[in-house]
Length: 355
Ligand SMILES: [Zn+2]
Ligand SMILES: [Zn+2]
Image 1 (cartoon, rainbow, N blue to C red):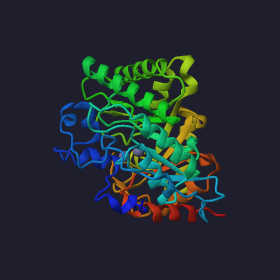
Image 2 (image 1 turned 30 degrees about the vertical axis):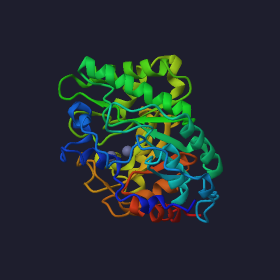
Image 3 (image 1 turned 30 degrees about the horizontal axis):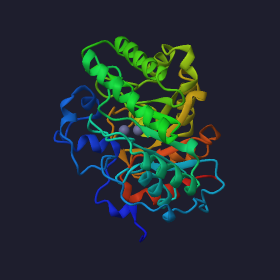
Image 4 (image 1 turned 90 degrees about the vertical axis):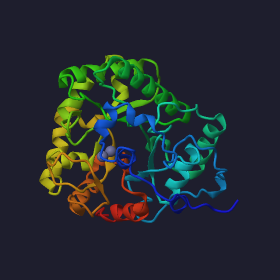
């Protein structure tokens, strides 16, 4: 089978946020998507999802990731890759861009009705992963944007929990250790505390029905009625999760969201302040993954729009602190930028390392 170029093959790869924004409601935000079930109804087949059939992917296309700059580094940089040909496609694309980590959806992020994973695709994923040299501990699943684990509406909440459970079970089938979600939104109908209680109850519900996957709560930019703009809110959710599941709860830090929420990580002092805030609230031990995105909007703007690394308002310095901080060692660090520059962005990030 001829070598397939998964970066160029797809006509358009959107960032996870763009996938939401480029719906029939182009101005809708992730917050609104989680509060409006109607955004789920139109399944846009142009978006790469697990619903497409096995693309005839050959595992012989894989090569070990051992790149000059990244080979011996304790940093594990990658990107949110595509599952357009089944979950195994995400691994192949990660290899192609020189990633040492990757994120993926395990079903369509934009529709509720998804066929189950095909057993042959599960096997293929595991086989291709073994051949890739990418450590399974560096894979993060990103949950569907339709899921609002803190929904004020009981029937929507039930649907959200069923969706989370299905996605977490898919993670367990595929051997993916982390399942990352946006914590939720009050939709302007309940208090922050009520929403946090609902999110924690959702977490308890799905953690009770799974056995190995770790649930990661992502920090948000503090836009609108979303929960998670402050690490205190993530800590409050974690505090309400049953003791029995505490070892399966963590946090994913998104650099764009943190910056837009008001953490000025452009300076070393600002970066260290963020790290100590994280430690004081959720605890550094809870941090299991990073999303590496520059920001199109200013620090404190509470707007979530990702920019390529070094091309946004964070700039290279913010990423230099991150890439040289031992506290980020051994954690998957995932680009959620538009896919055309991933290879260059990964090389750029490794070039920021002092040695
Ligand atoms: Zn993110
Ligand atoms: Zn974002």
